[in-house]
Length: 316
Length: 162
Image (cartoon, rainbow over all chains, first blue to last red; front, side):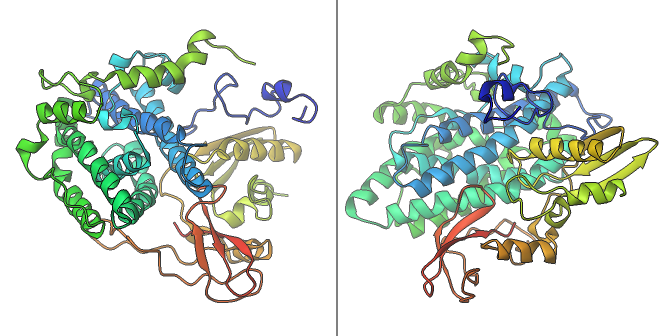
């Protein structure tokens, strides 16, 4: 059966199960990858860690995909769709790994589509809604400047699956970062209006960076075991790349990225309110890594999970 | 025909002018008893063609009379365009897609951040003009960019080095 005969029938044709969408029977993206966990690694910590990095990629990917049909130019829709697809691929590998390590019968579908917002472990930067294109490229820049050195170090992980995901992801996030950086420079070093809006976006997004460098207890334990990356070690490389971009963009930010006091969560709440963003629960010092999210994640999941929740296990 | 020959001759679903062997994604083909185990490397983490490629390999092996065919994914080492064979590059060029040059070499330390357009000479696959310009860093897939030739004025795709 082919698409020409019956598009819907072809989706469930067993002779060709390569159609890829929810409800059509996903293939396991780790198919055949050795899935053993090396000795001495805490399985619960490893599962949590895979969820963190997987959820970052999944939620960021979803936000990027929302720009398709809304970007300034067709070329940018292609770029954002492709960057989102790379991150979705990373998310599928990481969520599958999380499900296997957890060993509770949850696959990538169950983890992506059937968890509530408080079970998501992504940083809040990933879920932030973009007020305009400048906010998007600012967010993608910050995300990529952090995730690139993270994946680069992850390539040396004692866990062979994480090491492979890291080595592969470095190549991809390298050009994600270049895409975002080139837009920040183009807008920042552009007209008065584009400069003003790019600067406002950087000022709004930079306070969210603090959370990226606060280690979760699982990360600390796994980093000591040679499996994970303690995110606090990424700060220098992040600051250097951001400074390079902002200088070329002629943006002097009022938010000093290296000033610890400017990165406190309470500063973030004020900045978020001033920009019309959501107020996060920041008083407890808990973060997205603990399942504390803004209302924006609930909105994303309502859209992303609707079909899977309405038709659990549905195949068509 | 050996199992390795059968697998090598399967063509890529998105770049049907090249075979999987020429693309450099077949890592291993092992015959044991009446079955075959194949290891392939994904080109990109999110490459949606991987499931189709696995399917095509199994279909080709069964069609050639092999009873059991299993395709496993090998994530490491990561695929690089340097693994595309010379014949594969020639076929890409013949189909109007400028083939990748040598993949960038990584030196120690942080990954460098390029803020300008990449300095590289990509020859036009239509007229051979040596200097062409980038239109967009992405084309229909992540692995290709859009360029245009100032001489023949034709747009074309270039498979990026990775």
